[in-house]
Length: 177
Image 1 (cartoon, rainbow, N blue to C red):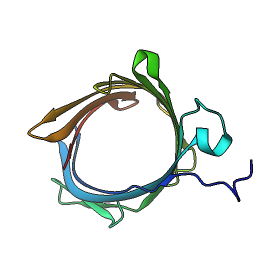
Image 2: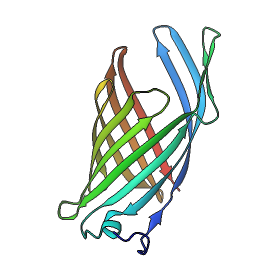
Image 3: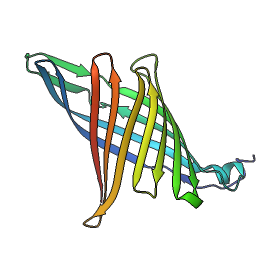
């Protein structure tokens, strides 16, 4: 493999996420604000392993709730969500003839001992993302839309997962400047 003597491109994107949290269980509601930090190493499998059509490999680390997120409940109770390190691995394989990008991913959360997730994403024409995954609660699904507006890229995402307490719907958005 000769990594020690070969040159290859290494991307190291970093990110920060500010989140508004709303939780509800029957008539009990809670609100909070949180901050996540993350980064990853991304490199070309084609360059590193000398396989011409191989896609990119990503290794990431996120620190969720890095400031210790506090949930304020309407019962006058407060709960603190402690920092949660998350390690991830991903592989992106383009299928150029079909204008499709396939992404395989695995993620391990360290807040709970046995919280590992696996997923598959298919991005069609860099516009529509179809997602499916497995976690401790079972199957998860999602869809994403990517478009340009006012010279910015906008992503809107929806995901669904079912668990013992009912269904969870998540909606998210990103505006790239």
